[in-house]
Every structure is written in C-alpha cells, then in structure tokens.
Image 1 (tube, one colour):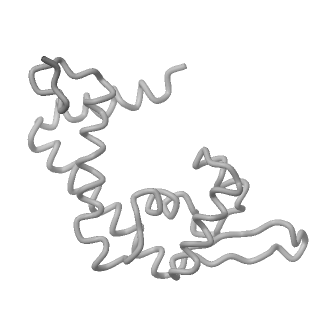
Image 2 (spheres, rainbow, N blue to C red; image 1 turned 120 degrees about the vertical axis):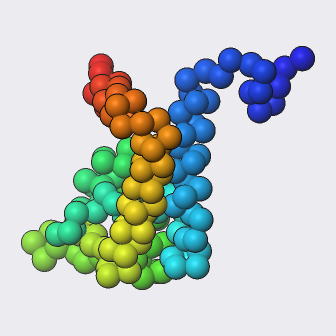
Length: 145
C-alpha cells in the first residue's frame, strides 16, 4: 500500500526540501494577514528582491525568473496595496522603476524575521555544527552546475 503523505516510505530529496520550505512559508504567513493584508509568500520574495534604490521591471523579472508581464502584474498588485511604487524613467519612458514603500520595507523585515526564527529553531534542533553543514551543503548545491 502506498502512502499519500510519505509515512512508511523513503522520502525523496524533493519532498524533504519541500517540507523544509513549507515550514518557512508557515512561519512567514503565521500572522501575515493581520499585519500585511493580501501578501503571499511569492509577494514577500519579490519585495525582498527590490533593492533600496529600486529596480527596473526587466531586472526584477530576470532575478525572479519570471516573465516581465507576470512580474508586472505582481508589482501592480503590490502597488495597489501600497507595498511598492513605480515611476517611469525620464530618459526612457518605456522603463518602469519599482521601489518599495515604507510598508514594503516593513513587510520585508517581517519575512526576514520569520526566516531568522526558523533558522534559529533549526540551528537549535540540529546543533550549530550540523546546521552550518546544512547551510553550506545547500549553498554548494545551489552553486553547482
């Protein structure tokens, strides 16, 4: 008999990484709606990609591995909620520069604090040596071609 949730079966690495990511998402969203209505984890990720000086839609789309159109829709949604603002560059009116608002900065601080709580929890559970090894291993895998 197979299991839907993986109990009793050897979980593959994608499932294991997915469960770890689920824990991070849960922590970010735990009280998100109360403080930052309308935001999903993907919105927090996008807000974190925007540097303080702002970024062009094209550059953000590349960093987020999204189409310009898809990213533009996310930015429009975030702008409607007051987390971003955008302007056209005077030297090239086709280019849209996106910046976080104060609310956007606060949302980024919220998600970064949630991630830090999870990391601290994992470090406590695994011990500092195993946690450092985990981080280094994930970094090596992410940089490996």
